[in-house]
Image 1 (cartoon, rainbow, N blue to C red):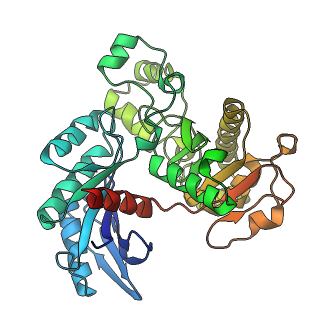
Image 2: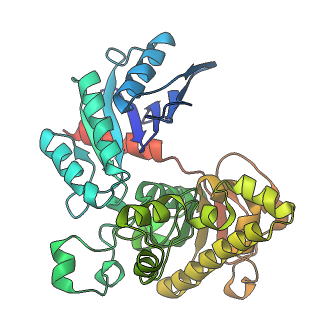
Length: 399
């Protein structure tokens, strides 16, 4: 059976995709569809070997974006209907209480994912559109949903339960689900592999720091806590999301500022976090503002670091000990300053960073702590696409 898998990650206005071999991790082609549904700025960048194709122009919807991407596959010599794709793997953000294993997609599965959109209104609808589109375009290839919440499904009850009316919570699926699970799972296993130890022997704290950000406490390969909650709004400060927030702030703003529910959702999802404090959500732009003496940008950075350290301390206590701390995703992999400031002054806990190692960028997994430090601090590039491809291929092969 072929190990070739097409992986799709459909966002609200974008699609990321890869065609890769699940066994060897060799990527045959990849691409990004941007600004779907916008009148201007639609763009697809498709890469295949040493060839790079760019399509610019309005992209009406996800179906149109995927059709154009499939045409770009053909232009670079790949016909997805005949090349031997064994499965299409979809990243699906929210599985609720229903899905926590990779799941073969059927009409009923699609309906349930769509119903779970109430828990992830920005994400699941786009995931459904992507699934429906590829089912039309590749009707003979099995499709698999891999859920962002799956790794955190079995967290201890005390970690996943909110202290509100229990019957109300149970009736409406109110619990902590956690997100970025595919990434946390992948990098924790890669860290163990790099250190030459079974993942079951390690207690880890993982920081997935991108535009969306989350941390997890992982004991012996099992997630025991994570920062994101029922939705991806809870926890760390993010690019446009606030993370932890006193719930009383929202009714206060609704009453005092006249915000309605739609305006509150817009504020929380699009206009808060680093962007809300500084006006930008890209860390490179934030650093430029800080270098230019911008006080608001410096405060945004300090708030961001403060929240990282708060959760680091909480997870140190929760685990009781920690063997390794892992940084991953765009900011985690590429910002030496964030890593250094998040872990500053913690030598008493066995946590140190070697400045030269931290500042040196090399591909692959790398250690940024001194050899003598009791806690190994690692930078581990995440690869959610590979994890999804392998999960999809295993499921289809087992069937």
